[in-house]
Length: 488
Image: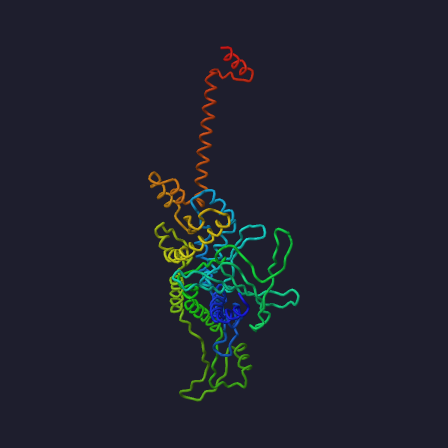
């Protein structure tokens, strides 16, 4: 891409980036438990009993409740604690693909769910390193500006990636803009906020492989993927943050909860109202009250109202508790999560547990459906790199495992009931104590082979025992027995 074209692209997508950035930053703040109630305290929780000038309302406590992080992490743990198992119909291919995905695949999927929950869409970038190894990594969502085709398949045609980088020579930050398409990537740097300062960023070193030396530097990187090496992991159809489902409810709960805390602090401060006090100062009033347990007041005769009144705050405890409980239930209802308190002292059966997980399963099912396509794109990119024939047409099966509280006994009984009518593969997949069904089938195969070998060994030993009915079997007897048979 030429410099002028890049300037126009950055300019025309600036509003899109700004709107997305603001939405993502808001979700990140709530994920870090920096809700709107803490805006006055720079996102920090703070107890302040003397935060206001109001004589009756001194307290200004601001303590956030971290419902949002609980909802996000709950789904990420439920969906991606165990990585999806990939099956392309060839055991050898499966092993190679698993090796390329690596040990951190489960953590990667887990973090993708978290990013997608906060941003509405997560992003993965893949590349080939200098040792010709396939590599992949998560890219922060706020660095990506996707450009889709206008065709019905809505294919990703280009990606603009923008991020800050430190210049070691000047110690200043500058912005790097990368433009990726299906053939190459072009790099630019922007030293200042002024778009006119945009210039080519020559950070790509070219090599002459036949001669074995560098031939120069440029701002263009050629790749042979045949597609944009970025994969989107959308959270839902509209790519909306999960915060939109429950932000208002979380803010309402924070407001009521902190109002409750403020009232409890304020109620400890009793204001005395003196009528026709006969003393000369408040200090003398406090002295008389403390030492003499009595205070002198002037009496104006019949109908006089001289004396001491108190001003206190009444707390509608029952009403507030009811609103807090209702708001909390709605947070988990509309946020599609599970209130951990529902499992407290619970002996729920398998069916009851499934009902508790019903809303979370609905949300997780939508996430899985969107992620399946993206995982398949990653697997096909790996197969193409490995040179596997028909990589773009092979059927890819994915098995996603939920991590949840469950009645293993009931599950095992279900599996045992249908064991005689199901394949070993189906039983291995449904077995509640099995994490990797493919490995379980291998273990079963090994057990059968070991068992056959053991039985063969036992049969051989028994045949030898028949030749020695008296049990008189030793090394000196064996040659004699063999020689006798030879002579015969």
